[in-house]
Length: 196
Image 1 (cartoon, rainbow, N blue to C red):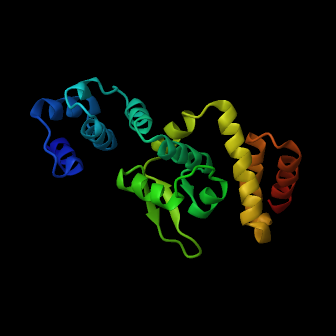
Image 2: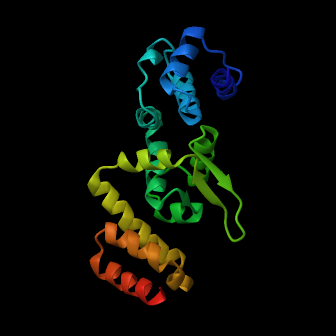
């Protein structure tokens, strides 16, 4: 009964045929997050009957939902994933190369429940709804693009936080190491060690 309640709450006003409800409940095996994501995947599917082919794992369902996003929305979600589970929209904006406005896309990704936002003392923060969502978006990146985005994140942080680089030395070292910007990575690793 609890599983049915979650499916109904996630589907909101959109009633699903009983056989689809039962398929969702059987696949999710009592996992509330899997129940929610499976329900969303079925609702978002253009053909409800074809939704019977949704993947059997939560990672597969998340991957399918991300793949169905419009291309720029998918790219922004992947770019955000490079920044981690939580990220500042200002930093995402500083490294974004797409044509769509970042804030508008973030609002849509929030509406589709990939992300949620949390007001901050200094600046707002966006958070991936679940760590798995961030992991799946990150893992969907090709290695070369992932490397390029980490380098872009490091360079964007240098511009954005120019007055407080010491505070961000660990993050800078992380991104510039994975971005293979070796000289700067070594510099920030040294500063991180000194700070520690």
